[in-house]
Structure formats: structure tokens, C-alpha cells
Image (cartoon, rainbow over all chains, first blue to last red; front, side, top):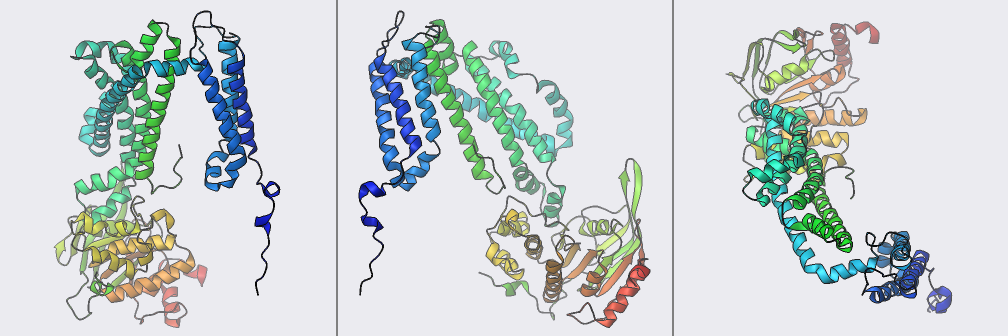
Length: 334
Length: 267
């Protein structure tokens, strides 16, 4: 005897269509609006002409179509839906933002024109100038990597010395107190004069900006290690080397990472200033170069790339920390 | 793979416990430039395999005595000998279990227990001893847990395993059960006695719990308030396992409480 199962699976498609993803539908409308504004109104281009307006309108329309599709299908694919669900309001806001940006710049010139560029001009920049932008990113990353690694390494060792050895602290502490709070950029004129190349001067400045917070935080991390941790290790037969490497360092690591984050932020600032004033490469240089040519579109494009680069590096550091400090409770998510 | 059996020693073999001999030990801490005496002329011996409880009011200086025996600090005056040799520094044959488990939060239970072997460079060849010690304290299922995932009793067991891995000849317990809830505490008291009977190490237990001292120790040394000096030594001539309502134990308890000056309060 076969028992009949509830026949919900055989209900007509139209009746059992899962609920629509409303945010997705709204996002589709917002992006369609952006496409409409871009396409329908003529560009007010007395000074510049934008070649990508048409393509940009098509692209926005395609995004709108994709959201329309997602609005009716996303709920059918639970893993996909879980990913996009929370982002719905952001997709809507982004579409509205693009429409408004388009309107106040290219279409109705509500903002002073050469200084505020429409989104399609960024696309133009990325299309025409991606080689130079890419080279700038690589130059910035390379300079940052050298300076940051040097600063973080030396800062960590200095912090360890300050926390561990009173004799080292006797000499290093006053120097740190005097020199540390000085912004690294204050050294800039002197550094470009003293160092053989602007690259080595910038490396030094970035290392300086990174090193100070890393040293202070490492020091405070080592100083705040529970003294019982040392007693435990000593009664179990640990020697100095073990106490430093296997007790002090891992116990101080959460502090060290705070220093590494602060150092990374400081290194970005010095990087840009150094590139603007001395180094003839990198995103900072690109920014001042674009300013010199009144190429405002290039400036916005470079700023966006820079934001992505800095945010990506911070994310990378967070990932590293999460790996190394997975034993901690309540780690902040980036 | 080494079984728990390797950690056991037959009682008939060489005495596994250390002999302890403290002669006229005094100690003081500097507090705002003023010396604060904490130990006053303490002389004490313990035979190999003995379980000695040091009992006294909180903050009287008992824990300081343990730090001196462990070799974490040198005494201001007097001498300490373990197996006839003067104590000059910490040694893995004398292991301390503190009131707080003080597990390293960045290490798993297994790697915490392995600390002593790792510090002495023995871990590669003797990994089995870590497993054996964890089995001994009943934590073999929690080897890969982190300390923040453990209950208070489990954390203290892990600290005990960390000590036992080193096969100590003198186990120094500084109120190791002081912060546990009463049920866990009772269970752990029984386990401590069983471990001591199996391993046959000499045990020094600091506690301010009269009943705990009488349940566990072969001899109870009663200290005065700070600066600590020995007020009396009370042998506990009772077989194990002991029961807290044993008439002889109740009698001893009254005696010890009187020595501590609180006899009337509890009748």
C-alpha cells in the first residue's frame, strides 16, 4: 500500500513561488533609475566630453536586470540568498547614489563642473590610464611593504627590549619619549636631504611612523603579561630564551597587533605625503600629478584605488590576526 | 603511545618523593620602603612521600614559603634543603600548582600540559607522557580545547596535568582548590589523594580550609597570622579514604580550630 504524501510539490508554480526578494526588486528599480538618468538626459559638456556615457547607461541597465532576476530567483537558491540578503539596502542606496551623482554632475551641472566629475569619467580614466595607475599601485605597495616591514620588525624588537631588559629600557625609553611622538612627516625635509635617494628616505619615514606605535604597544604588551605565567614556566625548567619567545611574545601578541594596526594607518599617511613631495612614483605622486594637470577625474579614480588598497591591506592584517589569535574570545570582526 | 602506567611507580621502588628540610627560614617583602616580615624563623621537615598541609589564616605568608621551596625567590634568612641539597633556583622536580590554573590562553590543553617537556627540550622524544598525564587527570578528551573553553575544575585539572608530566618528586600546591565550587572541590580532593598515593611524591599543600587539610594530609602544620611562625604540628593518623564525619577527624578539627583561635566560634 502506498500512502499519499502531501502534494505541496505539485502545486502550480505561480501559486507556490517563494516570496519575492523585495530589496532586490527595489535595487533593480534604483539601478534602472540610474540607467534612465544617464541615458535620457543629455550631458552638459561645455568643457569635457564623456565618451563612456552610453556604455555606462547600458552597464547600469544590465545591473538593474540582474537585480530583477535575483529578486525572483534568489530565494530559490538558499546559499546565494544568504549572501545577498543582508546587502539589499546597500544595493538600493548605491543605485540611488549613482542616479543622484549622475544628475548633479553631468546632467544638470549643479556642482561646479571641472571639480566634480560624473561616474562615467572614472570609467574613462580606468580605461585610458590603467597602466600608469597600476604602476602607481605597485610602486606604492612596494615602498609601503619595505617601510612597514622594517618599521614593524624594529618596533617589535625595541618594544620587546623595553619590556624585558631594564638596561635597554634605561637608554631607549627617554629617546622613545622624545622622538616617538614627533610625526614622521616632520623628518621629511631632513630625510630627503640626508638619504642618498628619495626611495630610501621614504622607506625610513614609513618605518619610523610604523615603528613607534608597534614599539609602544609591544612594550605595554610585554609589561602586562601575568607574572605568574613566568613563575609557571620557571618552575617547569624554562630558561630566559623560552620565557621570551614562548611566554612573553605570545602573551603580548594581542597588544602587538593593536600596534601593527595603528602603525599601518600611520604608514599610509606618510606614504602619500612622501610620494607627493619626493618620490616620483606611486599613488601619492599620481594624485599630485593629476592635480597639476587639473585632471580631476584621475584624482577621484586614484582616490578610489587608494581606498581599496588601504582597506585591502587592513583586511589582510585582520585575517592574519584572526589566524594567530584564534584562541582569544570575542575577536572583533572587520 | 605510552599508557598511564608509565607515570606510576611501584611503592616499593626508590623513594619517589623528596625529603624536605627548612632551617630557620625568615623572609620579608619591601613595602613602600618598609620591610614587611612574612615568615619568622620557620623550621620544618618532610619525609619522602609525606603529605604536609600548611594551614593558617589568609595572607599569613604560607604562599611565600611555597615560593621559597619552589626556588622562585631566595629566603632573606635561613636555609632550605631538598634531598640534602640547598635550593638555589626552580627545578622541574619541584612543581607548583597555583591557586589560579594560570594556563596559557594561547595554548591548547595538550600544549599547556606539554610546557615542562618543551621547556627542557624533551617534548619530541616523550610526547606520550603528555597524553598519559591528561588521561591521569581525566582530560584526555579535551586535549585540543583552549583554556577559555574549560570550567574552573577542568582548568585546574589541566594545571595538575601540566605539573604531573614532569614526574615531580615534590608537588607544591598553593590553594589549588580555593576557587572551585564546593562539589568540584570535594571531587578534586579525592583525586588529589589518589594521585598522591599512586605517584608517591612528597606533597606540600597550602590551604586555609581546616577540613581540607585534615582530609588530605598526613600532617598538618598550623601557622600564626603574619609574620607566619609555626604554632603547632598535628599528625593525622587516619587511613584513607577519610570521611568528614569521622569522629576522630571531627575531634582533630576542633583541636586545630582552637589552635587557630577560632575554636569557640564553631564549637
